[in-house]
Amino acid sequence: MAKRRQTPLRTSEQDVAAAKRAPSTPQTESSAFRLAFADDEFMTAEETRGIRFQLEYQKPEARMREAGIASTVVLFGGARIPEPGKPAWAAMNDTQKANLEKASRYYDEARRFAQLASETSRALDFKEFVVVTGGGPGVMEAGNRGAADVGAPSIGLNIVLPHEQAPNAFVTPEFSFNFHYFATRKIHFLMRAKAVAVFPGGFGTLDEFFETLTLVQTGRMAKVPLLLFGAEFWSNVINFEALAEAGTIAPTDPQLFHIVDSAEEGWEIIRQFYDLPASSHVVAPQ
Image (tube, rainbow, N blue to C red):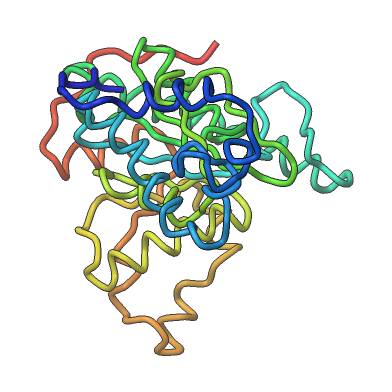
């Protein structure tokens, strides 16, 4: 965090320390006596939900603003997609195992795509086009790993889940954030996004894709390159043509996104959209 500016007033840290030194009496042991901001019971109460929303927005915002991160490239995608050659840990049957192992090629595509984005970010002093993922395994790991391949920082926006989702090892530690609220996490995914790449995934990925698409469609978010990786996957999962034919979306709405099959194809759309120079070097996945 930014260094605290000098002030003649006592700091909150000083008063937290002083409060801990108070003599033990019925009064000081009462929960009422605790400093409000240092009282876990109060800060996790139903009445302070609005404050928690604000804090979950403010903490990552302060850290990224301090680092000068102006824009990001977002990678959404399935946690269950394994690295090629690794077991499909989430498979529940032979069919899922075969399909997840086949989908492992998207791990490599996500990794290469993140390398391309990060090479451009390097040329801009790592202030623009910084890779951001959900911070977990699968496609998310591949994205952070691709940035690490070329020595670039990357962001991970984890969230506390019933089955623990620990940050993957490739997230830059000082940009490894953790959330309670999906809503504030989504804000941080998109508020700096100059491009959004969506790889095959499950309910979470679909939710993230449709929220992004809805924001663009309704004009609540500027049009940015929105890429769907995997023509076969997306044509099987979502029938966009049927939605248009039914009249529930405009005939032109499918033009809000691009379906691509390779990292190079996807990055070329972004490069042309922003008139960027070609990346100078990409490290092949090992």
